Length: 294
Figure 1 (cartoon, rainbow, N blue to C red):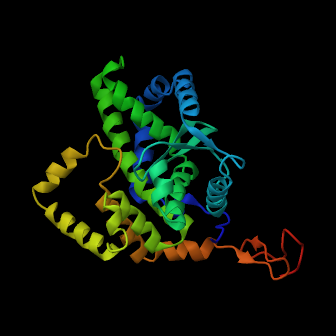
Figure 2 (cartoon, rainbow, N blue to C red):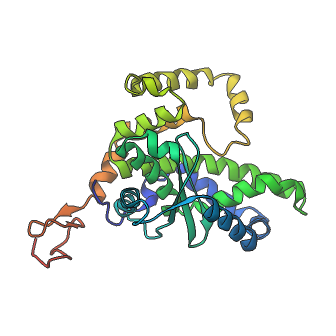
Figure 3 (cartoon, rainbow, N blue to C red):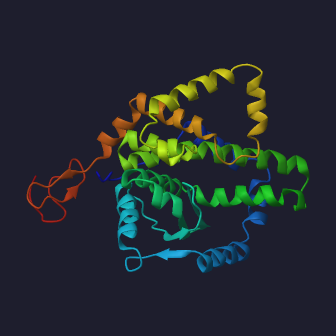
């Protein structure tokens, strides 16, 4: 796995992710709603419940899994390393939550058990992408505003644009973090195979379903949504924080085919010192580890 020194998330962020969040922050009342929703006392209590219910991954408790997460953080050049937990749930997923520097990354048991190492790298990288792009606080806000919007003492005409805008942005941020997941695992096939497994394909067919089959399904589905059905799709996902899984695969494949994935990988990939074989940034005049001239 190549370390991506100085990786700039703006280079791989989905454009609608960036523009939507910028628009949301400019909405009248956004700061006021943020203050009401992001109550540190409430969030701290919820984090305490997560810590008390889930199993913490440490270098002593699960050294291999901890090292895997650490390697992904290093590969993506993530500075804010989260606490790591596992949670019972036999499906392929993970989530990140927290407030400011207090961040928790939780992997469901199914993701750890049912995925290959590179596929799990994609899932971990996806969550690290949320941390690197500083999505987490707005994800927390989106989930809370959906639950509490009817209780907030603010006019609905102020709440509704923020509510639907946040949820729409949340979906777009998932496309960004899928790209981060790919940059982490650095294996397009493994990334798409992970999404295939997330669609619910039975375990006995894991080795027989190809990305071409899923892409064909995605193309057929997008075609079906080109007419009046598009209205149904737009209405049905209004409250969804995640895009439909098949469309996530299609969006990631489009990004790979555009050449952007390979361009970013090549731009930020580390080079190896010929003296001590350490990873160092491209363009270095000398090795920061051994001091050897390059």
